[in-house]
Image (cartoon, rainbow, N blue to C red; front, side, top):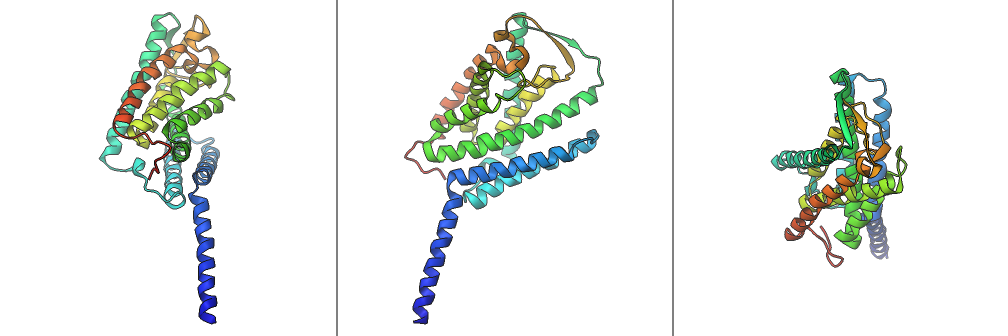
Length: 295
């Protein structure tokens, strides 16, 4: 009798454990838990960084970035219970960072140059202290790149992709990314749509192509950093850059108060970059269909 009861208890315990594990392995669960952890860490480090000088701010930014990466790794490894090849800390990470920087620089430089050529922007050196401008922009944009990419392309994209495939994940995360920017200063419906296409689709396509966090974080970071250094508002947030920008012409060309992201130019350029990325992702077999079970 005792052996029977012991066996029954073990079976019941195993079932409860199995349900517990299954609950946290469900994509929406580890997506939400991981997202909450990253947001809480970001808020905490933002509070700690107040009134810090340049060196202290840089150090805290690096520590904060490491913490959100660690939270992402914990969510994937112990909740989703899957390998995390997109976070490999090897030589590939360095090459992916460099490639992401190149793509980000090309995207912003070409978009800005076209607006300048069409008479939308003119730049004048601000004569401000370079260090007081550069370091705050770098620290702000580094944190933003890690937090936004780990949440949207890391957690949300892969969770939705597991349930509905790559195209479904690309569509939903792009829409969410655009909607998330509706609360920014100077935001409009067109600005949100622009962000959906040029950021949501481009960064989603970049992740599908490379399947690597370092690439998309680097692309995002250099995109926003160069934009900020030029003195152009970053998604509606004013930037005290190395230049002052005089904006002339229609908002469709210049982006108006929202900045470059609400201009038609980066929307067009982003599609010209994203489409080849998606083609390459398909050729590499990186697109997941509804019938596949991604590992």
